[in-house]
Image 1 (tube, rainbow, N blue to C red):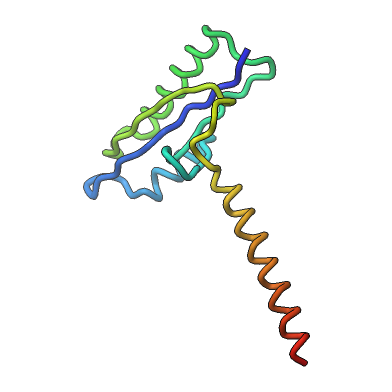
Image 2 (cartoon, rainbow, N blue to C red):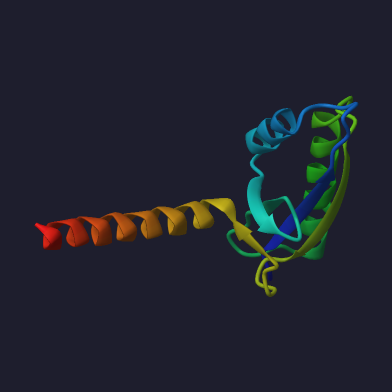
Length: 119
Protein backbone atom coordinates (compact mmCIF):
# COMPACT_ATOMS: atom_id res chain seq x y z
CA UNK A 1 0.00 0.00 0.00
CA UNK A 2 1.17 3.53 -0.79
CA UNK A 3 0.48 7.00 0.55
CA UNK A 4 -0.60 9.62 -1.99
CA UNK A 5 -0.51 13.38 -2.44
CA UNK A 6 -2.67 15.61 -4.59
CA UNK A 7 -0.79 18.48 -6.19
CA UNK A 8 -2.62 21.66 -7.20
CA UNK A 9 -1.59 24.57 -9.43
CA UNK A 10 -3.51 27.83 -9.82
CA UNK A 11 -4.02 30.50 -12.43
CA UNK A 12 -5.41 33.72 -11.03
CA UNK A 13 -7.43 36.40 -12.76
CA UNK A 14 -7.63 40.08 -11.88
CA UNK A 15 -11.40 39.61 -12.14
CA UNK A 16 -11.44 36.95 -9.42
CA UNK A 17 -10.56 36.49 -5.77
CA UNK A 18 -7.21 37.68 -4.50
CA UNK A 19 -4.41 35.12 -4.22
CA UNK A 20 -4.35 35.77 -0.45
CA UNK A 21 -8.02 34.74 -0.16
CA UNK A 22 -7.38 31.56 -2.15
CA UNK A 23 -4.29 30.73 -0.09
CA UNK A 24 -6.15 31.21 3.20
CA UNK A 25 -8.95 28.93 1.98
CA UNK A 26 -6.46 26.21 0.98
CA UNK A 27 -4.56 26.42 4.25
CA UNK A 28 -7.86 26.05 6.12
CA UNK A 29 -8.51 22.88 4.09
CA UNK A 30 -5.16 21.34 5.07
CA UNK A 31 -3.18 22.03 1.89
CA UNK A 32 0.56 22.73 2.22
CA UNK A 33 2.17 25.53 0.17
CA UNK A 34 5.16 24.36 -1.88
CA UNK A 35 7.70 25.73 -4.32
CA UNK A 36 8.15 23.90 -7.59
CA UNK A 37 5.95 22.71 -10.40
CA UNK A 38 2.86 23.02 -8.16
CA UNK A 39 1.55 25.61 -5.70
CA UNK A 40 0.06 23.34 -3.02
CA UNK A 41 -0.06 19.70 -2.02
CA UNK A 42 -2.58 17.74 -0.01
CA UNK A 43 -1.26 14.64 1.74
CA UNK A 44 -3.81 11.84 1.93
CA UNK A 45 -3.04 10.44 5.35
CA UNK A 46 -3.34 6.72 5.80
CA UNK A 47 -1.72 4.63 8.52
CA UNK A 48 -1.55 1.53 6.33
CA UNK A 49 -1.40 3.05 2.86
CA UNK A 50 -4.37 3.36 0.53
CA UNK A 51 -6.18 0.81 -1.56
CA UNK A 52 -7.34 1.82 -5.05
CA UNK A 53 -10.88 2.20 -3.72
CA UNK A 54 -9.71 4.38 -0.82
CA UNK A 55 -7.68 6.51 -3.22
CA UNK A 56 -10.62 7.03 -5.56
CA UNK A 57 -12.80 8.12 -2.65
CA UNK A 58 -10.08 10.44 -1.31
CA UNK A 59 -9.56 12.08 -4.70
CA UNK A 60 -13.29 12.65 -5.12
CA UNK A 61 -13.57 14.04 -1.60
CA UNK A 62 -10.67 16.49 -2.06
CA UNK A 63 -11.85 17.47 -5.55
CA UNK A 64 -15.38 18.18 -4.38
CA UNK A 65 -14.17 20.08 -1.30
CA UNK A 66 -11.76 22.19 -3.37
CA UNK A 67 -14.44 22.91 -5.96
CA UNK A 68 -16.93 23.99 -3.28
CA UNK A 69 -14.35 26.08 -1.40
CA UNK A 70 -13.33 27.98 -4.54
CA UNK A 71 -16.79 28.38 -6.02
CA UNK A 72 -17.19 31.99 -7.16
CA UNK A 73 -13.47 32.75 -6.79
CA UNK A 74 -12.92 32.79 -10.58
CA UNK A 75 -9.62 30.89 -10.46
CA UNK A 76 -8.48 28.05 -12.66
CA UNK A 77 -6.72 25.10 -11.13
CA UNK A 78 -5.28 21.75 -12.07
CA UNK A 79 -4.93 18.72 -9.86
CA UNK A 80 -2.75 15.63 -10.08
CA UNK A 81 -2.54 12.76 -7.59
CA UNK A 82 0.64 10.71 -7.29
CA UNK A 83 2.28 8.34 -4.84
CA UNK A 84 3.93 10.37 -2.09
CA UNK A 85 7.18 8.45 -2.39
CA UNK A 86 7.78 9.39 -6.03
CA UNK A 87 10.68 11.72 -6.74
CA UNK A 88 9.34 15.04 -5.42
CA UNK A 89 9.14 17.97 -7.81
CA UNK A 90 8.33 20.40 -5.02
CA UNK A 91 9.74 21.71 -1.74
CA UNK A 92 7.38 22.60 1.14
CA UNK A 93 7.68 26.30 1.98
CA UNK A 94 8.09 25.42 5.67
CA UNK A 95 11.31 23.57 4.76
CA UNK A 96 12.53 26.56 2.76
CA UNK A 97 11.71 28.91 5.66
CA UNK A 98 13.60 26.66 8.10
CA UNK A 99 16.67 26.59 5.83
CA UNK A 100 16.50 30.34 5.42
CA UNK A 101 16.35 30.87 9.18
CA UNK A 102 19.31 28.53 9.71
CA UNK A 103 21.30 30.48 7.11
CA UNK A 104 20.38 33.77 8.80
CA UNK A 105 21.51 32.39 12.16
CA UNK A 106 24.84 31.31 10.65
CA UNK A 107 25.31 34.77 9.14
CA UNK A 108 24.53 36.46 12.46
CA UNK A 109 27.03 34.21 14.23
CA UNK A 110 29.65 34.92 11.57
CA UNK A 111 29.02 38.68 11.85
CA UNK A 112 29.21 38.51 15.66
CA UNK A 113 32.55 36.67 15.40
CA UNK A 114 33.84 39.14 12.82
CA UNK A 115 32.94 42.15 14.95
CA UNK A 116 34.43 40.62 18.09
CA UNK A 117 37.71 39.95 16.22
CA UNK A 118 37.95 43.63 15.24
CA UNK A 119 37.87 44.83 18.84
